[in-house]
Structure formats: structure tokens, C-alpha cells
Image (cartoon, rainbow, N blue to C red; front, side, top):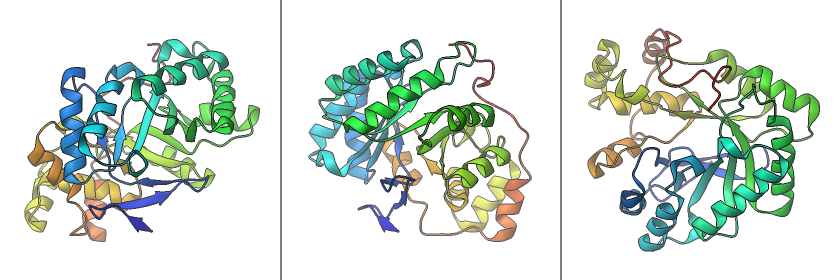
Length: 279
């Protein structure tokens, strides 16, 4: 296992590409504030930025990287396909738009943002992603919010296993079955909303563990993700929180700590259900 300059481990994806385990998400950061947030994150030590076409702040991500002085090749950048761009050709065209906004020749990871099963186009879209990977426009390709049934369809009708599935995952929604599916099929688990939009941070179990370890509840939750092997990218515009969110490698949760957090699972989502979400 290698590490970034901030001591963040990098994990190897199923095609050999390495990804920093803790990154910085820019969901809901206004476009005009994105460059500053990304620059601050990179100055703090982050080397993994997660954006999406739907966030409309890819140009701000590019500006933040350029202003930081960090070399492009030292930053792992993910973007995601807009929901109105499903289909083989549309997926390719949409990525070309992202590359223009980013000013890049490639992205490190390109994801189908939502499966949108009612449209029944995600298999055709994935064929476009296979071509994107072959063309070198993305170093790795994956999916987001896919359920086992969606992944089974990809396995049965295409030849490429996604490198990543980015899913809502936090102590109140632990997705054990889906994480086991990933493990069995060589798919990395990425957690969006890793802190449940701060909705779990007041839980007595987490505040107690924070006191035990001399950390914040958010650091305890992020450490739990890291020890599960998840890739996480908490979002914060606060430089202090950015620093705390990446500072989760100087302590460890013991087996009982992990078990206590494991008992917090309620199956509670903060976002849409991927089986019914229609965008």
C-alpha cells in the first residue's frame, strides 16, 4: 500500500489504478466557491477530488487544481455522467464536455451517476464506458448507486467489471449485502454521504467513542469507513473540518468499537432509493 503526501493510503482498483482512500467531495459547493475549496483541500493534503456533471462545478475543480500548483498527474479526479446523458454515444459526448470544462485529456475515474432502471439504458451506457476506457479518456470506469440486480445485468451483458460502485453508506445505512457483493466481485466500495449529512454525529455511541479516542465523532465515523476498506470523500468548506476529516490515520478503532458502530445500522437513507429514483 502506498500513501499520499498527507499519509492517506491508496487502494488498488481492479485494473491496477491506485486511488487515495480519503478524498474531497464538491457536491453542493457553488461553482463560484469551488476553486477556493479545492485549492484549500489540496493545500491541506487531499489528492482525490470527486465531482459530477450534475454539480456544474467541474470548471471550478480545474481552476482550484491549477491555482494550487499541484501537478495534474498528482490529483485523482472523478466525475460522473449526467442523468440525461444515458446511452452509448451520449456518455462519450458528455465526457468530452467534462474534459473541456476540466481542461484535461482524461479523468481518473468516470462513473454512471445513477442506474435509472426505469429508463433501462444503463447497459448501453456501460458499453460507451467500455469504449471510453479503451480510448484512454478515463483511467478507470465505474458506477454509482447500483444495486446487486443492476450489477448482475452488467455482468451478464457486458465484459467489463466496474472498478468502483459509489453508494450512500454511513453508520445508519451500512449496506452489508452490497459491500459483500463488491468484495466478491472485485469492485471497490466508495461511500457518499459518509457522515449521513452529519445526521449520525450526535449518536451516544459515536460521541462516546470520540471521547474514548480523543477525536471528533466525524473522525470516528471516517475511521470506521477506512477500517472497513471504504473509499470516502467528506465535503466541507471549512478549512478546519477539512484538516480533521483527513486526519484519521493516527488512531484505530478496536474490534468492540467496530461492533458498536455496526449495531447502529437502521437501513436509513438520506438520499433517493436507486431502485425507484427517476431523476
